[in-house]
Image (cartoon, rainbow, N blue to C red; front, top):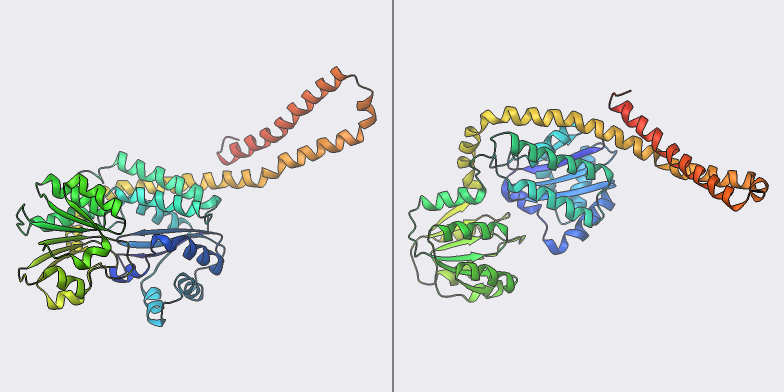
Length: 407
């Protein structure tokens, strides 16, 4: 259990712009994580990245000391300077053993989220594990830990009201937009056609907004979203040439640097002096911060959604005790699961040993076996096979019953 450790950077302790520095583009994810696992010496590694957290769930014998953490962060991004590493050390949250499991259950159950009660996180945790498993970065401990984590999260959502009238970052952003009394004929530029922007687009369409232009790195994905919205689609490379004007930008990409540069924004605005709205839900932000100094922009971003998120948290506070009770009970259950699994692993050599004994017996009694007729040999083989199976299953069953308190 003490091998389970979590290195976390979340909205609770870390500026979202720094969290953005810890995001990895999809194309580089496998190579970056493989190098990190090899360089840091951890046995298993899972990488969870959302709009308000980046967490490394690991299995290792090493203690997470300052020296280990420096080595880990440097291996994750060799381009980090001393300031970046110092910021990591200042803002990191570390969890180990029971605390790590409690944190993992809390994250998947959304009670550690920026928006408590949002269900997207359970899918994000599952997908993050599946991806790292496909990369051959995970092993037995993380497999059973994540399996139990998903079970706990589902139990929390089913047996508490934590997710009643669910709220999400997207719905908070839309609420902020509606406060601005935007007309339904407003011209929207949607940059990125991933899950977040697709969800936002559905909110907008539902509330009668209808003027959409979609840009995406992969044109085919932009076209799919445009078809749903009756809008126009362009590849992201054409954003710098777009001159048809806009009122609102909705952007959320996985880029590691600004997509909307001052030069591109200048071209998008043209001679239009009207105040614009930018909904930027990307981490790091897609909108270059310099634009806010030179243009009249009403920015809706993760950072200014936190006050609304706190209100949501206060409304769900009474459910937290029920959620924590479920989590605590399941931590104890997991410990039993882990003990049972240790027995299974320890006894995994039993079948091999039993087969070796059987082969040795065949050699020792070779002459006697030669004197048996074929029917007798067949009966003896059936008896030995039956005993072999029982020698494997009976000790395993007894060990499990011991740990479950049945013996």
